[in-house]
Structures are given as C-alpha cells and as structure tokens.
Image (cartoon, rainbow, N blue to C red; front, side, top):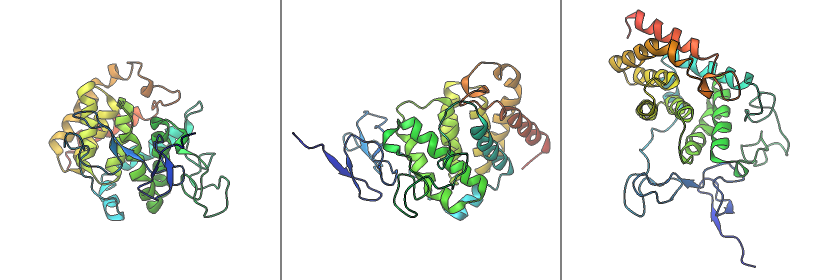
Length: 276
C-alpha cells in the first residue's frame, strides 16, 4: 500500500497529509489561494504563481500592537467589531462558535495545559477536518472574541491564520468579504480592507455590510471623501436593501440583523458630524 504523501506545515513543521488544507497541530494554512490569473495551486506564503508569475496575493502589513491601535483609532470600527461578536454569539442555530465553548475564548477544552492543539492550548478543535469556510468562520470568531476581551496578543496570534483561511475559500460570498475586510482592518491594513470590501460592492453595490466596512477602511486610510460616499449610499439604500432577504441580513444562523441599524446610525452620525 502506497503511503499517503506528506508535506511539512510552514508554520510549525509538523508533517501533515498533503491533501489537507490546514495543519492539525497549529491550525496554520498549508497552501495558499489559487492563482487569480491561471488558477494554479499555491503554497502558503507564496506571493507569486510558480506557473505564470502573476501575483498571488498583495503583501500585507504585519500585525502588531501598534498597528492594532491604528485600526481601532476609528471609533466606529470598534463598535462594529463588538456588535459582530455579540451577533455571532447570540445567533441561533449550530454555526461555528469561538473555540472553548459557551462563547468563551479562553475556556479549556481538553488536553494537558500547554499541549499543542489545533487552535493553541485552549482548544481541541481540528481545523483540518473542516471546510475552508468553516475554518475561516471559526477563526474569525476567535479573533473577534479576543478583540472584545482586549486580548491583543491572542488576537494577533489568530489574525493571520483567519486571513489565510479566507484566502482558501474558492469563491468568497459577500458576507465572507465583510468578515475578511474586518480582519484586514483589525490588522491595520486599510488598503486590503478597502480592496476586499469594494470587490464585494462590484458584485452588489448596495450591500450594507460591504458599504459599512468599505467606509471604515476609507476612514483608516484618511480618505474622508470615499468614506462619505460609501456611507451616503448606505443611508440612501438602507430601507429597500435591508428587506432584500439576504441570509446575512436575517436573524438566523449567519445573520447580522441586529448589526444593520447600528451601521445605519453610525453612517448617519458620520455624515452629520462634518468629520474628519
């Protein structure tokens, strides 16, 4: 019987099945997104395609405590992040929750303290058994929960893993783009946050979540004109768009119904304030 092919995790060097997308020990991504030009596969960390030479991903700003302070300097973004956490925790259904169970980002979940588990010493969740979207959602929840709790170091640990997980989703939904844009903004990378959000708006120009996070990314970049344009669109289309019946606008699993009026209020406040 031919043994299964293996590759070393680029993050912790643990040998892993070559067919896996994530390391079963540290949760790190084992491969990168497909090349946008020729669709060839890439390895984790690749910036250029080995088949055609096209850029696989834009270079990201490193996350640090200082870049985190830049990201949260826009007060609206803090509110948005915390409301997302609340909505994630209170949404009905069996969607992915923050590791540790019961909504706690730090509750032990089996294994000896300090032992290497898929999401660190506080989780026994195996990312390798999940789809790319399931892993991305779980890691997003983990980052947002730590942002809410003020755990900058732990948020920094999981932030690049969460972004890499979204890179592995073959076709990002508009809600995926909302989440990924938030993660880039939390990393202080306003340019990537804006690019991801506006890619969603190219698909649906009235999408409330993408409009809100695009405005916030523009604020991080100091582009008041663009922020106002996105916020004005949000206010103008809100009544009709909020009744569009999209899953992400609902009250069920994956819905952000409680977040929508907060976004409208923040948009109206920004437009009326004469900021920056």
